[in-house]
Length: 152
Image (cartoon, rainbow, N blue to C red; front, side):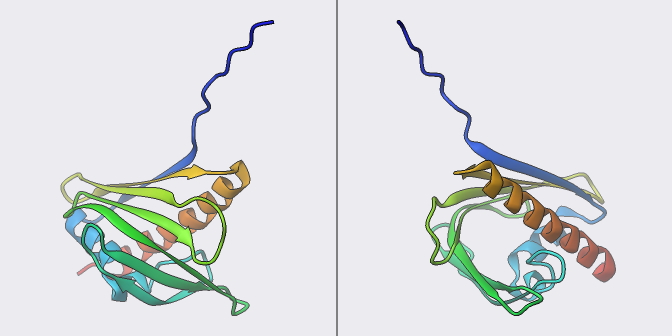
């Protein structure tokens, strides 16, 4: 009996948002700790201790806090930065097992609007991917709302 192995696709996620703001503003809100503190984390979470060594090879870390007061520290390393266009970084929940994931955020300049595309891979389970998709989706909704409320 002959068996063939088929390669499996890595489990990943892609989320897009169309934002009524120029890419330079969206990029700034993504890369400045004071701005990130306003949108990082799912709905009803807060964030603190945001540290960004914003350069290729630099480390980043942050802590999100649930409404019940539980802290979830995270961090990683920046791999690639193209101002106003693209950020690539690793992501890991601090102190948890499992692989680092690779996050790629692109900022497509559409004049007065920006298409933000967030991609993250690989996840070791579909459940982990789905949980991250929900959390990051809420983060991006908060980011869009924050930008629209504070555009000037």
